[in-house]
Length: 316
Image 1 (cartoon, helix red, strand yellow):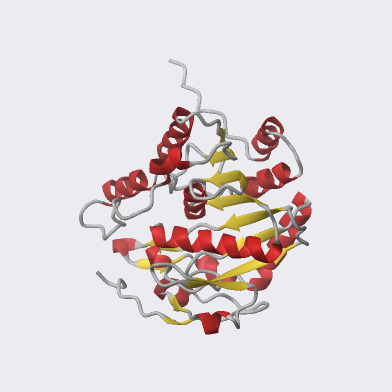
Image 2: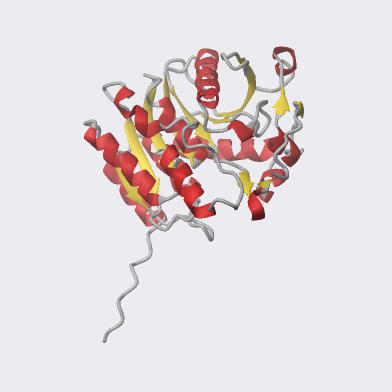
C-alpha cells in the first residue's frame, strides 16, 4: 500500500511560533531520555513498549492539593483516496505559542490551571501517531499524568478529550482514582465497533483500516471504573459523519448498565462532518471547574451548540 512505510526521524523541538511538522506526525519521531531533557515542559515516560517523551503546555498557577484541567486532542492522521495516509492540513498551521494561548484562555475561563498533554507522535511528543488507540498510547498518557501530578502537586484532574483523545480519557477512567470528571466529545469510546464500521464503509479494496482486535476498547473496561465514579459527560452529534453516533450511545448504555450515571448531551458539531465539538467540550469542563452542576452545564452547552430541528415531513 503506498505511503504505508514510515521513516521516523529524531524528535524536533519547535518553540514559539514555529509550526509543527506534518512529516513528523506522519512518520513518527524518535525520542530518548537525554533528548527529552531539552524539551520544554516534557517528561520521559518509560513503558514496556520502550517509552516516549511526552510534551505538555501548561497554563495558570497550580495549587498544591488542587485540581488541574487536562486536554487530549483528536487524531490528525487521515485516510485519503485509495487509503493513502495523510495529515490534516490544520496540523502544520499550529505552533507551541498557539497551544499555550488556548490553554491560557481555558484556564482563565475555568479559574483553574489547564494543561495540553500532547499525544505520542503529535505536537512535540515523540512516538508514533500511526500506532494510536493501542494499549501503549494509554500507558504513555497514564504515566505522563503521574509525572504531571507529582510536579505540580495537584490531587485531582478534570480530563477532556475530543475524538481519539476522548478514547484515551475513557480508557483512563478504569486506571486512575484521581479523576473528578471526564468530558468526552465525539469519542471513539466503542473503538472496536468504530473500526468495524470503518471497514464496512471503506470496503475490501479501499485500503487498510485498523484491526478492531488491536485497539484498546474503553467500552470493554467500564466495570473497572472505580467507585465513587467520576462525573462523566459524553458529548455527541447524532449527525456525526466521522465517528458513528451509535457507538457513543452504546458506550453510555454500557455505563448505565454498570450502575453509573453519565450525562449524555446531544449537540451540533461544527464543520461538514459535524464532528467537531471542542468548543462545548472545553466550555463544559470549565463550568465544572467553577462548581456548576450537571443541569447547569447541560443547559449552557445546549444553548451553545443546539441541534437543528428535525426535518418536517411534507404534507400529502
